[in-house]
Length: 260
Image (cartoon, rainbow, N blue to C red; front, side, top):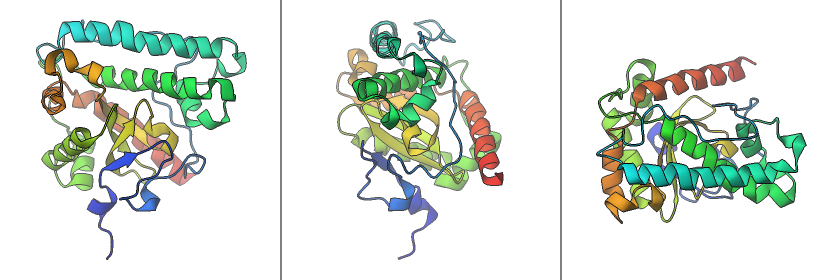
């Protein structure tokens, strides 16, 4: 049977090995075989890393994400990942001027004694940066995609509602801690993927556009084990204007790669 575009863009549950038993192998590449001639840069931050200045106060995402959860999540969990990442790089100055994205994309080339620390805590830092940056208070957030991003979502998923369903299914069915992403692949197509723990799409060559944190610490105080309710609430906070900015940058990167 010929695989349709919809099948090719089916939800991918990536593992550390890059394997996806239920997906066509050409849709997910393993580490060391990224079919791209570019480095992905979203923020371009280097050592020493620090907490971001959020575009909203800690109570700004109420009632969908409560203030206490925000306080603990940002100043305890996220700060903890930053502290461990900085400590790992403190004695390795040759990597201190490398961007966070570079470290994560080339994690297998790092010294063995810091490799797992950078993967876990560098991933934790990067993933949280994108999570915070993808949200705005509900009254300020652009509630629907527009322009080129809206067209790309329609082309890849059929409709915005179909995309939302795809992401929800991936997030709801993900076992354990992790993240669910909207990404662009090397062909400029959009896909929904989920990653384990603090793994990122970067190592697979995907350009991340938006992400929702599905670790329990992101929602447990208010939602307990009701992850689905948290995901439904999160939609109210996604700022599709910010996502569109990343989409446009990603499209330029992919276009320049194809031209080269």
